[in-house]
Length: 513
Image 1 (cartoon, rainbow, N blue to C red):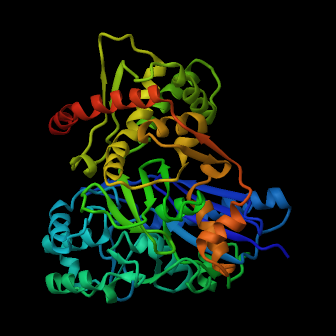
Image 2 (tube, rainbow, N blue to C red):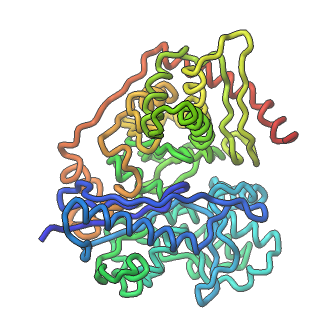
Image 3 (tube, rainbow, N blue to C red):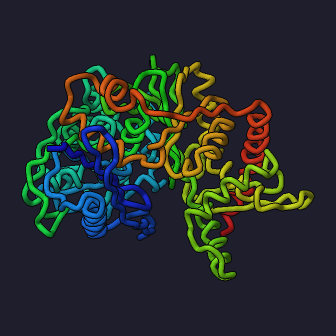
């Protein structure tokens, strides 16, 4: 009987599911589109939408499996949940949600972030759960006195499916700093927070698990939550819930030291596994962990392709209006290819893709802005290239800090929506970080594929995660290597200089509009 492993990831714009077999090959997929909302000043998703999305996504996967195999999906050997990291989900003792979910996208915790960074001598970004918690305490919010549990979105969904309150170490490292030697929350920092805020992290936050650890099993109630038809059997092994950073690392075989990956979609972030600690504390760099607990440096940018997607939708509307091909994915592919014919520095446009705030460059809010150089003839190729460059610009700004710290990267993998046309995405990423970039056939699979692999590892954890990926999953996996030419690196640098030098335009737009 074939073994089946399922990964489900709740991303920013889609909930996606990937089912793989014992050869670690995707055999069925499902998805559900959703969108966050700005409610009372906070970016959020409702828990009703979370449950509705899970059911719809799983149903889509189940139908795909039926089409391809002719069989009804009933038994899964192991499964895992991943989701967007960080944010604020606070519950009372009976697991009633105390305030609407506050996502990673919110930039409302600057005061808390500053205090905690100074207290711990460790960078605590605004996105992290502990920043949200302490900001709520500083704001004297009414619900604080009733908090019994806090977790991430992945942790909460995994709890609903398994009745086990635990979290993978990579996702936990976006809640509170981790001591990678103890594979748990940092005790010295937890004690400092207890003295500061009278909150015991070890009681309120989920239990920390590394990849392969026992995170319980799918309960009868959990199986019915995923599959209300009642076909799905209970009992599947649950992998520790992970964040989208950890699943991206897994999906690209970038969990060993001196490897890294860039995940590019609604947001963009790089993860580089460190050989040794950084010399200094940098507000632009988060220190988190791999799913197996190794320290890695993370440059996380809130904004990536959302603004470009909005413009592509307008172009798509124009194509439809003229009676043309209405296939949106094909339009993306053609635009990605066409932009390679434009000026290498996208000279006619400078684009600010900031729909929300961007702490890496010190912005608490965002406004999408397009600036056109009136002395240069505008072209569609330049317009698309400028949008793709802007998707990478803030990341490049942060990655330059790691380069100055002497961090070595042997292999940088690219995955996510930006790499749907791998040549263009990899070329521009290589230009932006001046390093070789690799993509694999699974680059577009992203997080749910990585979570499915972690589910497989939960079932087959007889060696380290690093060896499991190297020796079993990716041993013969073909990959494409892209190294940008020197002139392409210089062209991106010219764009980045325009981008950084013009940030006052973005600040003025935030102030006036």
